[in-house]
Every structure is written in structure tokens, then in C-alpha cells.
Length: 561
Image (cartoon, rainbow, N blue to C red; front, top):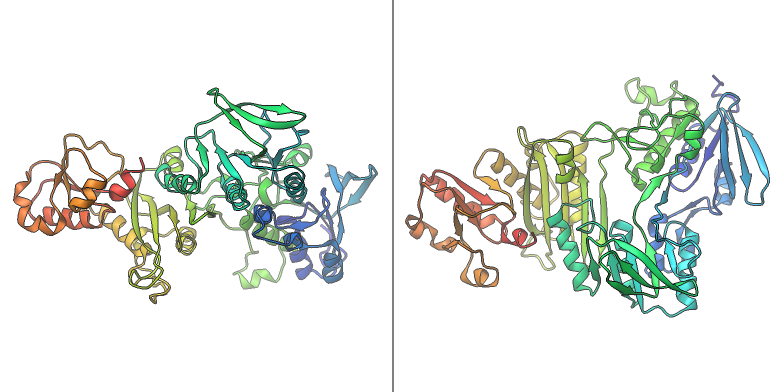
């Protein structure tokens, strides 16, 4: 093994988030190493998450997207950067990489430590035509430049975005911002697959309120062209959508070809298998970013989680470990253990016009796939004190283990405050906490910032009540036929959103009228959000009713089903 105090040769394949972070961290912990970055594209590090916002003009200057230049890497860090250099093979025995420049010249470069950061690439569906004049993907600066050039060259009144994931929704928002009529096409029955269906409905509603035509469960059969320009999209249903511009974002796949050719192990989810220091099964080769598998913090199994945050952290870990190895100053500071990557829970967030949506940990679909016995609780509340001006509503959903309340995940949708709550829950997930732990957190409070009982506390309280059957929750989409349904909303609320078969007793009349009900029948209490229904359920339980449950999330959530 080379001496880390000598001129250790560290070669990094790929820049952007993981590779650039690895390079600068390696330099900070090892001033003597020879560090080289080889980047296939023309730019070493750019903010790919900011591309949609420059497309819509919210980020006005293109240069703001350039995180770092080759000149900065050299002048500040003495890191050599070679753009337009594609690495095509790795000789592990000789510790040598080979490749080709953009001008067609071949090159070879030896390494002592190699860090792979080749990232991911967008999936190109069968209907995608690379030579079309107005059909694009948005993944690189060049992609963005091509789209902007197309917008300048030909008038665009109608645009179609294919794919309702995070990037797709950002693009929809920004195209509407430009005054373009937008259609969104998604093959799944909901937008934002990271959310459960009822939470995604809130975002779908916002899209429609903003004038976006939303087509769900819609497969694309073909695109119709005139002079290499797409003029319409034909769905499998036979419907045709006229369009002047098409932007496709239907997912990504890891760029693992180089690693596979080198004989590195690929894990069960399709990413390169690495250890806690981001080492592959070759101890001299590391891998980071979208191309690898991380350990999921809830499932404790390897998963591909292509997000910028984990990629940056992985680069930092790989860079330090590659530059110093196991014998490092980090050991003394961390109890004799080298610093490691840790787990990832997939925390994500997106703005969609006037709403924000995000998730962390597992949703219901993931729990079912993992065969976890889980429960859920959904609440609504203002993002800060309701009496302080500007309070905006948010919907918060907790997913927790049925037998012990261990927190499994959460989702939030609202006009403000979602990021704060998701970050707190991600922290609880990291430490393996429960809904009881969440209920005990001492959170910052003043009227402009939160409430004395934060929505996080309220969601935890509801979860604890459910686990202790005080009362039990019944799912928002449960079959209620045959049950005694007690609707405690006001007459005006019921008129606006009626519930068939319910016995209507406003909450303030229940103490006088509860004797109208049959205490032996299984009963479900209902209100708008679940808060008044909880009070009603507790009252009826106290009067000796045999079985009383509260409709989770109330009619506001049930109406989304």
C-alpha cells in the first residue's frame, strides 16, 4: 500500500457533486497528494438541481449555476481538472485508467486511489427521438441551453412534460412561469411517487388550479413529427395532445458500465456495492453518488437513492478515506473509528407553485413491499401560531411501526413549513426514534415561527393515541358501510361535503345528544380533519361505547380518495 505521506496519486472520474466533493476533501486532508479529476462533459461542477429555475428565469444568470471552474480547482486547491476526458476502461492489476478526449485522442493515467463518480443518466423511453428539434431531456447544462435556444428560435404556446417526478414538476412550474400552456403526462396513477396517493392528490389539485392539464395512468404510444419537430403526442388511449415542445423526465439509471467492465460488484438494486467508507470490493477503488447503493436508514439494506445530498456526503467520506486511509487523524476524534458514510433515508422536497411537498423514510407502498406491519396518522395544522398573521395550512402524515411506534417515515404537503418538519423527522429516523420520542422534542417556538404544540407534536400525539387505542384510527379510505358513523361537523360543512349514511351531531351538541346513538354498534367518528372527531370518540368511549374509532385525517383526506 502506498505511503499516504508521499505523493499519493488520486484520480477521480466525474465531477459535479460527488467527484468535486471528494477531490476538495482529499486535498484538505492531504496537502501532498496528486489529485486529478477527469470529467466527460465540458463543465466540472454545476448545480444541476438549479437547471429548471434558470429555464424559467427565476435564476436569471446562467453563471450562477457554475459551482466551480477548472481554474478555481487549480488556483485554490492545486487539483488538476481535465474536461472532455471520458474514461473508458480500468486496469485494476496495473492501477491504470484509459480513455479518450473530446478531440479523439487516447490517454492513460496511473492511480494509487481511484474514485468513481460517474453518476446517473436519464432514461430514454422508446418514443424519444434524439434528433428531434423540439424534444428534450433536462439533465445537463447543454440540455438546458438547447431548450432555451429552441424557445428563442420558435414560438412555444403549448408544451408537454412527460414524467411527474420532482424534476418534471419543477419544469412544469417554470414553463408556466414563462406563460406557456403546459400538459403533464404520467404513466402512473399519481404524481410524485415518493408520496402516498392521498398526499399526491393535494399536489395534483394544485397543478390543475394553476391551469396544468394533467394526464395520469397515461402511456405514450408515439410522437407525431413534421420536419423533425414534434407536433403532437399520441397516447395509448388514442387521445392526441398538440404540442410545440416536449421535455421528457421519466427517471434515471446509474452509469455503472465502467465499474461493471472493471469487475466491481453490483448490488441488488443495481448500484455499485460499497462499504461504509465508499470503498468497492477493490480497496483502491471508491465509488460515490447516483451510481452506488447506500444503506437505507430504516430498512438497513442497500438501496440506490439518487439525491444530491447523499452524493456530496459520500464524496467527502471517499475523498478523506482515499487520501488518508484507515490510519488518520479522524480516528482519535471518533473513538478509534474512521469517519463513515452512515445511512440515507431519502429525504426529498419540491416546490409546486404555491405548495411544497416532501417525504423522508418509508411511505405506505414501501412498507407493504417490505412486509412491515405499520400504522399511519395524518393531521392538518397551521405552520405557525394560527393567530399570528400569515399562518398557512400543512398536511403531515406519519408512518410508524404497529407494535412499538418506531418512526418509519413521513410526508408533508403545504404552503409553508414542510421543510422544517421533514428535517426534524429525518433526524429522528437517523437515530431510530419512535413517535413517542417525536412527541417529546423541545422545538423552537414563538408565534411567527411555530406553535406551542407544533404540527410535529400533534402528529405524534395522534399516533400515540392510535397505538394506545385512545381511540384507534381507521384508514381514510376504509369501507364504512354497516358502521355507526357519527359526523360531528357543522351543518354548513356537511352540506358542502356530505358523508352518506352518517348520523349528524355537531360536536358542541354531542354531550346532550349522545344518547341518540347505539353504544353496542361499532362506531366511527368523523369531522373535517380528525381533531373534533377525536374529542367525540373520547367522549363516547367514556360513556361506555363498545368500539369507537376516529377517521384518520377526516373528510378533508377522505375526499381525496
